[in-house]
Image (cartoon, rainbow, N blue to C red; front, side):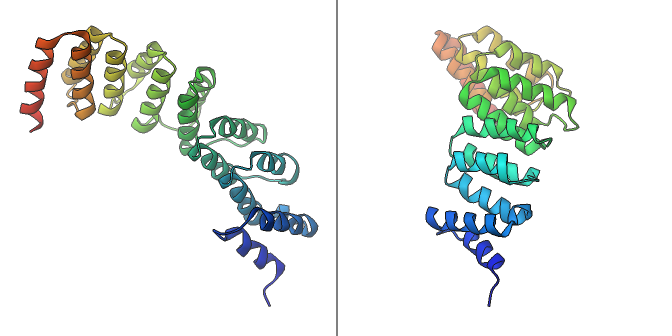
Length: 237
């Protein structure tokens, strides 16, 4: 006969578990004192987060889960972020810090994307600062996410300063800056960045070309747009 531990574990692992069953599992976990079991506690947190039971998750973390781990927080923060519950994701990230846990690069990426979605510049600046004092390298993916966040927050100066500080500037980051300037009607600045990118030996991608073409077109620079289109066809095809 399977133990109550195995029954609870299987119940929480089921894709068809109902809220009622989850609550029953919660009661048994309390009675049996299984909150010290990281596996069981993470399963319960994961279920509640995937079903967007924000209050239950917060209550579990604050009052019942004695030793939350980084994987546990990563699971629930990612679940809320995937469901566009960005405020909840950022709140739980803050709660994780109060629990004395440091994020890894993957979790920083999730929270930076949440800041971009909320256009929340202040926490975004804080996460950027955390990245520089942590041991995680500012790779092209994280850097492009930071640039995107700054652009979403209409802080293109911060985005450009980040580009200037990078030792290796990937085409993804260049493209984000170029598109950012083009979308704001700063076409001359976008053109300068496009030229600087090519001087550095970084070849434009489709996003770079389209960003410049859209900028020229929207600004009424039709001759430049036609010439650039010809160049892009020649170089890309």
